[in-house]
Each structure stands twice: as structure tokens, then as C-alpha cells.
Length: 113
Length: 115
Image (cartoon, rainbow over all chains, first blue to last red; front, side, top):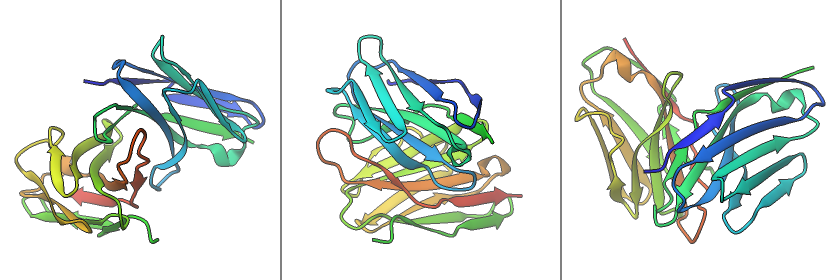
């Protein structure tokens, strides 16, 4: 089955710097890759996603890139702000899996003012 | 829409007691997922339903755990008997299954503490 590895597990940056979180997946049939943000004590919420027919997607300060050959995808946050501090989860979904997402272990991002 | 609704938000119980967690998915969504989140194991999928039918329950840890979805607007996750190692946050999520990439919307979670 699918396995998703996420790195790093913790990341600390200064406000204004960029943050990059990387994930690898094992199932070449996976075709949907969402990213979720979970603030302390809150629920995971979708912030951006990418499908296998696209190599990059951007939404204001966040962007996601996908390399299907290498089976990895990354989340990029530019001009980080303290409110970006949270745990970020990547996930992968396989074609025909009926929507089942396999999540990475999460990255705790801390943005220091 | 009110989003995914879960109850109770917090549950404290003693070992051996039965615990029932409840979930109301977003109206119109046809897939429902139950997750467990702990510091040690992260976010684990326990079971998911499509059109009220359980599709994959391989994540259910033991026979003490059971889940039902009697109709499109309600699901329960039951633990009987509960044990201290079941303490975790349990999330329910729902999605509308259509094509590639079905966004899952999470409920607020139920924080379960088993003493």
C-alpha cells in the first residue's frame, strides 16, 4: 500500500523567511496530493492541493510542487508570518482508492517574530 | 453549511466503560472517515464509508472498536471496553467523492481520555 514520508518533523524559521516541507510517496498510482494545516487544538484544514496532471500550484504565499518521476512533492511558504505556526500534514490518494488519504507524520513549523 | 459536527467534544471515562463518538457529515457528502490522532502515531485512518457502506476497516485497532453508518447523515464510533491507550483525539471527516481529488473536511474532533 501507499506510504508517505514527511520531512522535517520540526522546522523553525524567522518571520519573513521561507519554509519548505518535503514529502515522498511510494505508490506511483497516487494522483492527488493535499496539504493540511492544523493549529494547536484545532482540526486539520486543507490549505492547498495538487493533482498529478500539474507540476506546480500557487496560492498567494503558499505553493506546492510535484515531481511524479521522483515521487515527491513539497510545500513552500514564503514571507512566513507568526500565524503560519502550526503542524502541516501532507497526504496522498491513489486512483481508485475511493478518496482514502494516506497522511505523513506532520511537520511542526514555528515562525519566530 | 455547519460543517462536520462531532459530539461530544470532550469525553472522560474510566477503563472498561463503553464510549460512543458521534459524527454528522456535511450534507450531500457521500464519504465519511474516522481518524485517531496521537502524538506518538500521528493521524491514523481507522475506517471509512462510501454511501454508508464500510469500505476499509483495516485501521481499526482491535475488536473493541466498531463503527456504523446507519444513514447518510450519521455515524458512530464505539469503543467497548475502553482502555487508557485509547486516549486520543478522534476526528471525523467527510468528502464528496467525485473524480480525482476529493477534499476531506474535518470535524472539530472528540478528545477522549480514558482513566
